[in-house]
Image 1 (cartoon, rainbow, N blue to C red):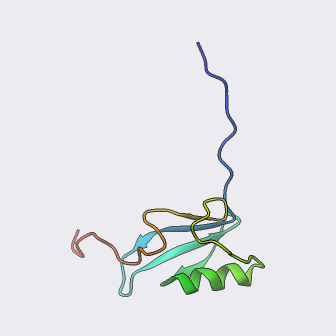
Image 2 (cartoon, rainbow, N blue to C red):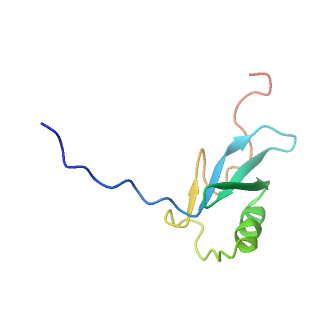
Length: 83
């Protein structure tokens, strides 16, 4: 028996991907599915959004911003540097 197909969850306009090792560590930012740059802080994410005409009122709203591999406060890798 098959279940009822449900639509995929909506994709937010802004995706902040997992922390990349540094120095300094950074996160890749995508807007509308396109890589637009690196972010080293929340400010960089907001600047990337503004550069693409997006005003972010709530960084915790998953319909606006999706944080992959951590939240808005995750900016360093927890992996050992030699791993």
